[in-house]
Length: 295
Image (cartoon, rainbow, N blue to C red; front, side, top):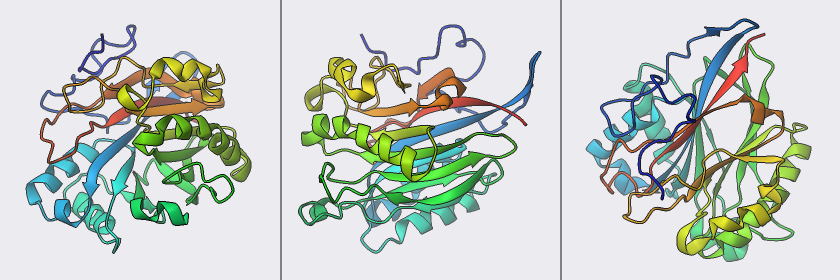
């Protein structure tokens, strides 16, 4: 049975973080741990579907204050469901975040996804916020070229990032699947992984977001039958997680890794249940931690 609490790898559960839903969760110290062989740094990557993130939500001061508090604890966070046709809300949120956070973030903003004619009624943007003291950008990113197969209602956005003072660089992708076509779109993500590896000349790829990968939209037991369900891929958010505020236990939100970066995942992951107000979102943020050797 799925649990609504954050789940950690059993060997790491003690003493690292407070359980989401408690007063606070702290990730931003980025302490360097010395082990017998090398120094390392830890980076948190999060994904958050902020329901209908547009002008109405942006005008609600208390909701925006909550969003700032939620988002500011992560080193990288990919946001889905940005719905402002004037494309002003992302910049307003970045300014608010930087005015009320100890850390100053920078932003990558996709074009409006849903570029095919039959998809334009569901256009959204993706936001990637990151701490520039820890993260550098190799390529500002692009929407996946979906013009041939039209596999996605909203094309994934992919950018090329690097962790400063380390040799790790990787492609970060973001997706928000169409619920009614989740099975088809999740299956088609193999093409996105392959395309990304070629386009950015990097085999290390992570695609995060609202996969709609459970309950009435997708049978999670079918993951093993997918091309991205093979041993080449790591599903860091397991089927036991519950990532939505509804009473149903559904693992809609996912993070899938491939390449050597799988070895950087230290087993720590979570679902941030620190809010219960649907005015903020109907999804909770999900996160993982990477441990990277310092050069």
